[in-house]
Image (cartoon, helix red, strand yellow):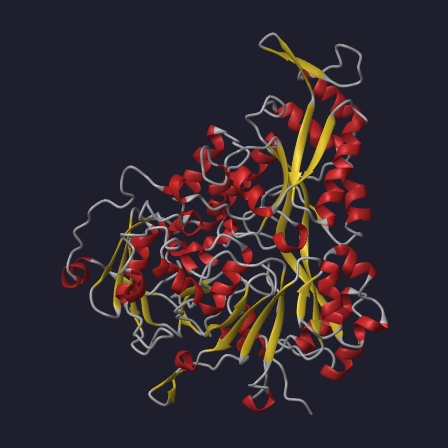
Length: 636
């Protein structure tokens, strides 16, 4: 079943956790800044399919059903307790957590167990900006897109890519890795009844690569494709710029219907300003398992199961989605959301450490809910703008990491639930360095020594360190921006208190999310608190760390890192790639463009009626099947 693969290609650029803790995700460009003076696609004369088949040696690639993959996995994982026993357990030990997941995370044994008329009420912390899938730039937009969108590719909980059996007949890659050929199914339709064809994929690609269309988030990665040619309604060939092991992750981008958007693309390339585009913003045509039923801005997004997805000409051609309706309740305050969960008004929500530890242990919670957790590779950090006078020196950035009380953050603010983060890769990831880098611990003397060596000394005796630049004395007084969420504000306040002890003034600036996005993208900050989700391939980090890249918000630059990223994306041997990315990790750790803080494991509360949740390094969603494995049982 195709659910969560629509925008999984975006990888690191999707922040998985903003709506709980308030850190920045992909930043949108304004239309006027997105315009380029030259085209992003060069003219290309594609060979005929016969010419291509004659010269290319094709190798078959997997076309899989993610639900079947999960069933196969679970056939080897026996429950440790019964469902009834699991529902009585408190999740207060890792052993109980495993019992809950093994019993309640399973797929149904048969269709008779499923309440096919059920609605799932999900929690999101903010509204979506646009219903157009290629305009997505935030976590909620990508999540809704995974339910309503159409796509050809996905990957499993181990980040193994495959073509989606719901939409693809065959997928082949050339032996030289320069081409991918996909044959689509011919029983696919948009929600308005028009067929979904290869021409929609080509149109979407060209629209994303149109410099006048402001879609930087989905353009990242898609811009690595040289060309896509539709040879008929079902047959596509992707032409890559060069043979790279990362090409597979660039194949899946959001698809929009050509018959809708081609009509006014030239007159309104923003896809949002004209009356025509506003009409389809409010009444979108979708290609995935769900379509829009109702949207009340700031309150809820209601989706309904699309019969045209799984039924064609009176026959069932794909698995029927388990829920008739998906309601996304927009509740910004986590405490208000938790009350809704306890009252049965929502069925699931991510829990921050305080909620998990202090407000979900009592009878009022366990009467209606249970909770579960899993390892997740989402990391949080203080990001230093390396082009500012304050943080251009590596010694100063390292001093920041020594000045901060990491243990107090982990023990008191994070309630002992999170593990320290020491760089861009989790220790369980195949590309992490061996041996792993070590966590920083507060050492104020070391921090002061590094600041002294960097020339930041209290020259005038006013208690604030200062330094002379171009004949002008600059006091070490800076601001750190963060979204207005309790945990992020507490962590930044702790930094402020720590720096007070060594003669540095730090102002904590709570910043509205969209403003924070804009300032981060324009580098209009001195420091920021943020977080990034994991990518399925380490190459996605290039967008964050290579000189001049779009999400290199802190303007970090190191020629060694740039060179290693280029080497990593050209190395096909996995062991050799691992060493390359491990070296990048170590160099970044040495340079400290971020002060890495912690990995945020997944902590979720679930209504006791919900089943089928399975965690991956991206949490319970964001992979195949992800959300698609959730279901509700028939009431007994």
